Image (cartoon, rainbow, N blue to C red):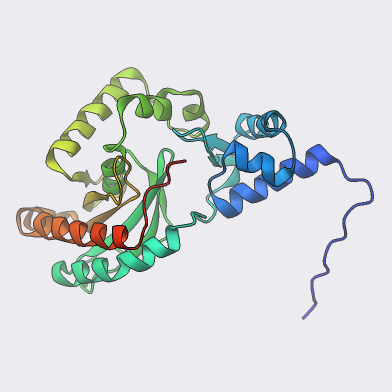
Length: 267
């Protein structure tokens, strides 16, 4: 097998190009980047880092979330989640979600939100022959997935406006018109009232799901979990003990997250 050669540093380094490429690497590997951290890592003024990041936003390689931090944009594809607490969250949540999947014999998922999208960190697949398959690594629009809706319902209207009507929303492919945005606000109000969100064939034909946010420290939700089932079984699942069991799991998981010192990233 031919070994890869380490690349040597070019004799004539174009600093601005090198700094831009380093920012792309940080976005790829870390998943979320604050302006202050970018400037410190590059050893430049915040104004310089801001100009470089603004160009990445302009070209679609970065977007800004509601806290003004930078996330990988559509031009980057969908890289790893890169959040410092993601692995610990997944490890803590796994036994709770496995137990829930066993009790319901349905597929259970753990998701986190990045801007207007959710990423599936973990899927526990049901044993049932007719089941929803593993979704780990999948990225979906937050406003369509049940876990995504549950997470969006934790945000205030001003933040939602920045996400779906702000400058970065068009680059993210998620800009809404006012009637659609108003309908989204109405749906999220129902989610807050009920304590759970529904997805009835919005992301995949023949599949339905119930989602709940997991809050380790108010006012931010750090993740959500959902139970996915074939549409044909959804009524019996939903009218049975699914929501009650999900509430129990949420309470237990939030307790474990607080005990572990995990909380939402305050930016």
